[in-house]
Image (cartoon, rainbow, N blue to C red; front, side, top):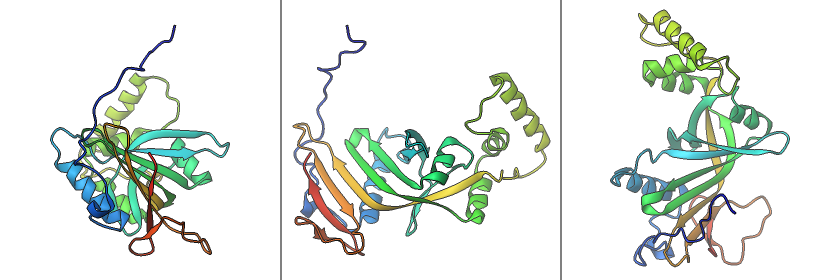
Length: 232
C-alpha cells in the first residue's frame, strides 16, 4: 500500500482569460516583468510573504539542496538575499556559485524560476541591512552558528537571553563577519502561468553565450535578453 495516494488530488487553476500571451507581456525585460508580477502578488489578498523564494544550491560533491530565503532587493546587479556564509548554502555557493531561485505565488497560480550566479554584496550593504533588522533578529544572528549542531534548544535559548542582556543598552548588535549578502545575476528567467487544462504558459528569457546563435523561435527582448515560449 502506498503511504500517500494522490492521483485524484487536483484543483482548477486560472481562467482562459488569464494567459501569458506575447501581446500581454508588459515588458520585454525580465527584471521589469518580474517587478510587475511581484507587485501584483504583493497587492493580492491573503498572499503572505510574496518575497519568499526557494534557493537551490549544489555542494562540491554534486548534491543539490533547497531551502526558503527572503528576497530583500532587486536592482541591475540582480536579486539580493542575506544569510550566514558559514551555513550549508553559503558553503555550497563558495564551491559552486551557480544557483536557482524559485518563486511560487499559489493564489495567482504563477511561478518564476531564476537561474544565475551568486556573488557577495559589498559588506557595507550587509551592515546597513543588518542594522535595519529588529534587534531580536540581530541577536539571533549573533548567537547562531547557522547549520551547526547544537547541544540543545535550552542552550541556544540561554545564549540568546545572555546576548540580549549583553546588548540591552546598545542600539544595534555587531554584525557577525559571516553574516553576508548575496546577489544573484540571472542568465535565465522563466515565467509560468498555470492553466486548468494544464496547457500552462511558459515564457523563458535568456542571454546568449558568446558566439551562440539565436534559437529558431526566439525573439529579441530588451538590453540583450531574448525570449521564447516553451511547451508545458
